[in-house]
Amino acid sequence: MLLIVTTAFMIFTTGALQSPFIGLWVAISLFASVFGLWGIVPLIIAIAGFEAYIILDTKDVFPLSSVIMIAIAGIAPLIASYIIFHAKSKEGNKEDLAYHELTNELTQETNKSAVVIRAIDEGVIAVDAKGVIELINPAAQHIIGWGGEDAVGLDYKSVLKLSDKAAKPLDASLDPVVSVLSTNQDIHTKDFYTTTNGGKRLILSIVVSPIGQLGEGALIVFRDITKEQAEEREMAEFISTASHEMRTPVASIEGYLGLALNPATAQIDDKARDYITKAHESAEHLGRLFQDLLDVSKAEDGRLSNHPGIVDVVSFVGTVVEGLTPRAKDKNLRLFYTPNPDQSIADQRSFSPVFYANVDNDHLREVVQNLIENAIKYTPEGDVIVDVTGDDDHVRISIKDSGIGIPKEDIPHLFQKFYRVDNSATREIGGTGLGLYLCRRLAEVMGGRINVDSEFTKGSTFTLEIPRIDREEAMRAMEAATEPITAIAAPRSPIQNTPSQPDSFNESLSAVPAVEEFAPIASPLPVVPSSQPTPQFTPPQVTQPQQQIPVPQSYNQPMPQAAPLPPQQPAQTLASIEQNSAAYIQSRPQPGIAVPPRTQSQDEQRNV
Image (cartoon, rainbow, N blue to C red; front, side, top):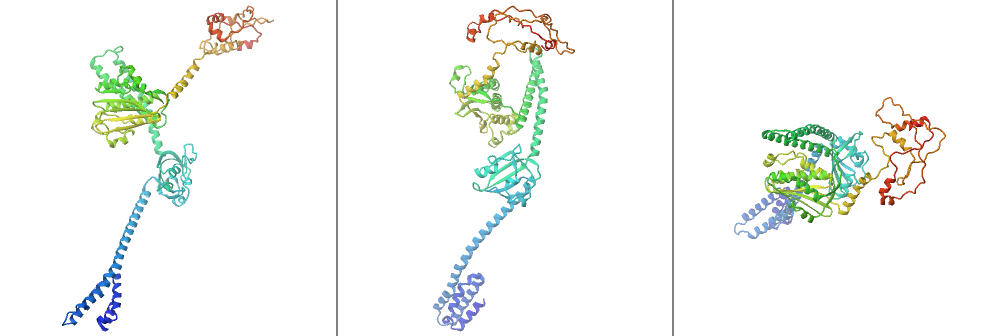
């Protein structure tokens, strides 16, 4: 402001428009916009005053040229100043504003993330590409017993000491963090343990997710499920024990109700028969529920047995469909089996392909039967179609119905334990929500899986997919399965332990010299000459016998002298025996073996 006043005074005192200080005014005007309105407004006021002074000073003729020159000399520099400085300042303000907004937004998000990470109960560890810890939240510090200052900068393996069930450190091929850093794919597992800084062993549920691009880092989120696993085991044991104990009286109730319904064992009137029939159906339903609970507990604690065998899937599923056909007819439904749509035409099935699978047939029967029963249960009217297809590696069993269908939002939860679709149609039908869960677990045990494709009110299609084996492999497996039976049926030794022959008696027979199995004996064995008389055999006295063993009378008498043995005939071969078996049987000696006498002490006789 002082510079403007001084310059204006110098211009007025040195000739106004002819003043040499006009150029200084122009220079001052060029920098006026730097100060904003405080620099522009005073200059405009000064120019307007100078214009008024010129006009008033010239009374006769209007000084148009002077006015234009003053305007150009005064206003043009202001416009140029505004363009030079104010426009740049505006652009700079926009950039600064955007920068500050972005900074504030990132700061807010960072603060929110930090608050969330500090507040959650699950442990969080962030590692870089080399596995060095960059972040560890308080929950992780509490679970594994490490401080944040101590853990940051260390390798995660020294802090989160993962191991298997045998307490052995994980191999690099099994380490989830190494796998995520190398594949950039999420991993979720409950199979690993860790040892805290205080030496306590915990079971962890771990989720490892990649950060950024491949190999840039990983985020480890974990929680302690040791107590949860123990509670699940206790619950499974309780369910298993309760189901087992309650299944026994229910089975008795079913049996007695079945006897009451049997005309051969009870005589009841029609009204009582109707009541007992309903009670019997309820008892059967209760028994199936207990069996499902028992199977669920076995599936969860790993006690679910699996005994695979070769199964002709088309024939096997046809048997299941045939058994459930009466139930479909009771609801006036049409149950079709695509490989053999007309069960009365036996030759029609020969056109369907043959699919072999090496699975537990009990598991396969339970899964297929449950899926077909569900299709019949949830189909008020229409058709249920069962089909068996496949490729070189898989066999697919599909069950399609025209029933009530499944809403889209319920499909992801359909195979969870105790989950049921909740709508008016399902409430009337009822159920426990265990059937499909068991089907999924049994399919996994067989090495397969179950898929569902459904649309609400338009029916559903459940597909069971299991591994397929080719015909040659199936034949080899079936031949191998029959080998143990052949070995059991092989001929045994002529002298065997039987219930009528005590071990001591068999031991005495084992002292007889061995005889060739296929060599015929034409006459009794020869007598070995002895100078001593044949001793008498006295059975040993047993004070408290466990079993009375009859002793032949011949044992208490002197052993008879056998006739001399005629010349030994040559041993017959197996081929000659097979060709003339009757002659060989006649040439065998009669029952009873004459043992040549020998010199024995009384103790030896007692042992015999």
